[in-house]
Amino acid sequence: MGLLMAGCGDGGGGGAPIDDPQAKAAATDAAQSMASLQELKANGEDSAAVNNVLSSYSSLQGMALAKQSAQLKAAQLPLALPKADPSQCVTTSGGTTTYDHCDYGGSSINGTVGVSGDHVTVDLTWDLSSGGQSVIVIMKGDVAVTETSVSGTLAYNIKVSGSNALTYDLKSDFDVTFDGNRCATGGYIRVKQSADVAGVGNVGNFNVTVRADYGPACGDVVVR
Image (cartoon, rainbow, N blue to C red):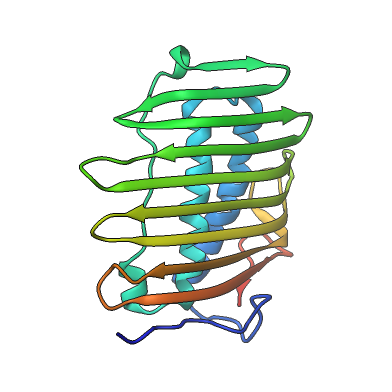
């Protein structure tokens, strides 16, 4: 089985700009997702706010698609957290919200969201295992977020065991500034995604790095 490698060797997401409207749109979405983490800071008990962490994954993954083949794009994992009432499984103390086996549509979330001033930490594990297929998503973040800026890191590890075994690692670092409408006007987002998807068709492994630079005007973005 041949291995399909995409975008290897560009460690900082360098190279020529990618003239692709979809790549630019994904980078714009990623910046907006980063801005939405402001809501998580405001209420770590809100399931919709926690879903912003997953929305950020989808947007960051969309950036990584700019350097992937059609086969690799087909192997991507969409993630969306079902709506739920976490009142029976969530406790908050001293700025730390703890999720203890919270049931989200048959899946469960464990871990913590910590808030201290403008600083937010995320350490959550989402278990979607069912029907003999094990799916574990680990989400970790260390973010400083205000109305006009967001900086820090978000990382996601996804492991699927069973007939379609695969492992994803997506790591991001960012430092973005926004105008009053939460439109990015400066800074960058860098995404590094690697995976072993040998269990999905004839795909194999891949490793990509993509960087988006924003500004100086709202809507300006260069993806490399």
